[in-house]
Image (cartoon, rainbow, N blue to C red):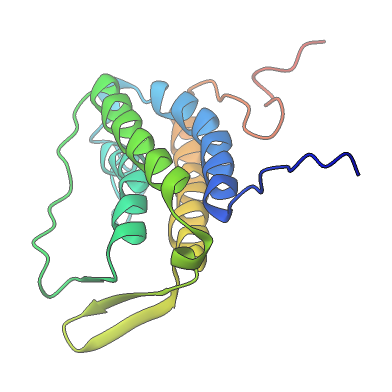
Length: 174
């Protein structure tokens, strides 16, 4: 060996890289939400297009509290979803949350990511798992899941879909 030390990539940096990768596709999807279709819903039991897009835009905001707090208690939290009404507002909220998330992930230690984080509603524990697992399942997987729903909503509105993990039928060339 040459004696050079290589800096070890932290778990936070790895999660940040994955979030950044997923954010590119998510941002493209949010940019295509039609401003005049925010109230549209595919079914009475489904969220409206605007509510779903807002939810997708807000998911990155969950990273920082997961990294910096020991728990989230719905019983003490007066959360109200954002009222985003335009594609620009969606992008602004998404970018703000993403930047905060990336900062938090770049600065968290592997040891802190292995500490238990709890989601509760008063005395009822909904889940308790290592922060890294919460970030993976409740943030990244959650974001990907709802982005997939959003793509279906957009398709039903005849919006050209951007590629996520490769080109879409809308981007295929003969």
